[in-house]
Image 1 (cartoon, rainbow, N blue to C red):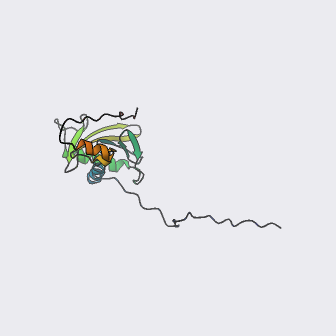
Image 2: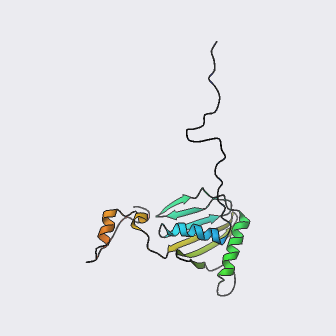
Image 3: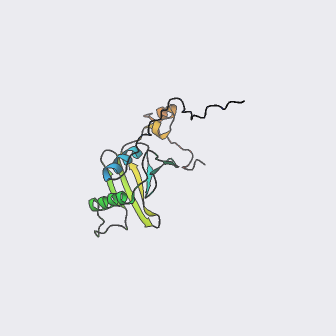
Length: 165
């Protein structure tokens, strides 16, 4: 008679059967501003928000899904856009058309474009930092950053484009 091995499910080392950590909600302008400050720390970037999907961020030509967030609820995203529009109305007082622009103090200037389609509301937030980004966050090696700090002469940096070609 052969015996069957135990059929218990093995839990990987370091993990327990506890519930996964709760994911963050993105439901207000304040939540957006915190995400924008995070994006600004990486340099020029774009944040993509779409109802029913987790947020995404494009940095240095690469799009990253922000899986620490819950998928965006349509009502929450519409409320955030309406709040932005009332805080920053267009010249003719209407919502829509031109992009909505604002400044996150000590962080970034943001341009928000939005569209409504069959899949729901979509926002693209272009984030331009108001402070210089550290060389480490730009991926510049320490030796090259030291050369850029030289007080004499002109330093020109050239490299691959955003597509890394």
